[in-house]
Length: 470
Image (cartoon, rainbow, N blue to C red; front, side, top):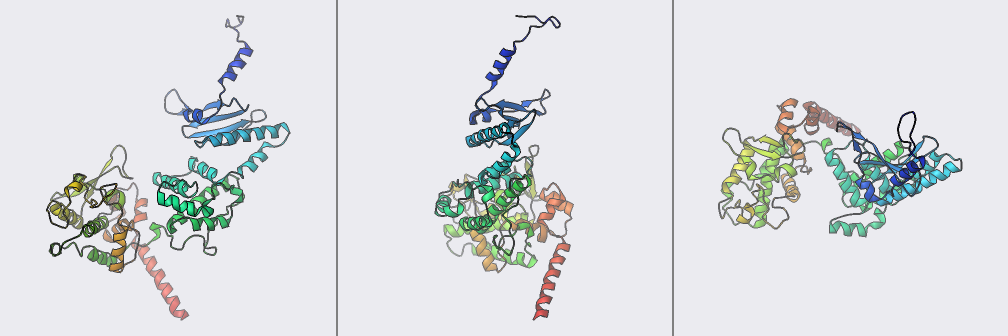
């Protein structure tokens, strides 16, 4: 081994170093990329990018800057590098990126601009590839629930990977309308939105899926993949269903409607009527569902995830301050995962009635021993995967029809509570009771008196216009 005279260090054979670098290359596969992670800094607080070169295509490599961000690149002239795409967890994305790297290298060899090749390739990506890129894009502002909902909707109606057997049959029967995911985004037109609308089951679901695709195509326009967004919806083209309306844009039930609902919900709950006849299992289940609806309105909590799965272990009917405890909701954190919900007189009366009669045999509110083991406040009396009530929409539709009120979504119970039943509370007081982080969140669930005045004035103006036109 030769010795360097100036530094007294052994000289390194350049040929050996080159061979070692070649050995460090590996074939980029799905397994190697899934196992690839960024390096941690010395203090363990930040990520340092890691890089892995492909042994098949020279100049093609992947760069990992965070556990969920792995991008493909191709070396250009000098120190230039060209981004080819993002790894989405599938082997097909590696193959496509490797082919694109070869095209870029061929363009450089022929003296052409490689950016033209990349722009042409980006406009030819399919809708599924665009949706995967949109979902994994770190610049997208996601809420946890909205991100999971977006993935579920696109998996069913764009990637056609439904889990439910009925939905699978619906997808097979309407495949000619739903086969849009494999289409290149530069060939998508407004007619595809009309076809997709025909194939998706449910008015609200169709509107949400179309809105999801429109968001992804907006990102494609911003990145220069396509010149314009073909999914432009307005009243003239009539793409979206007219019934589609955001919940926070709807008007909550007013005082008169709340009184009518309370009378209808409590009609069969009067103790004097319980022993007048024999109750069937379905009638008992309907009575329990009515109690769940009434409690949801008077506590102002999420009916599906916080009221229907409530357990007796978390209910404390004290004389002075009755309350129940919620665990790991959307507004809790790891430091304090439990929330106390204090009860008003109506909510306390509902829970006390159910607690009083649940163990009395022969009573319409009696819960069988087989269902009491689960300790749910609102159990199912029939066979079910879960032991508590999961869907109250059929009961709710009958209640709205009989009471003669507007048929709004059950989620509007919460809007009604914080708008109509708590009019004298300030924004800060509602924020504390509802366990919100800011008053801005309160304003999405509760209307101010000023908002009500504006709506009434708008209705009055419309009435005047009709009278004057007549």
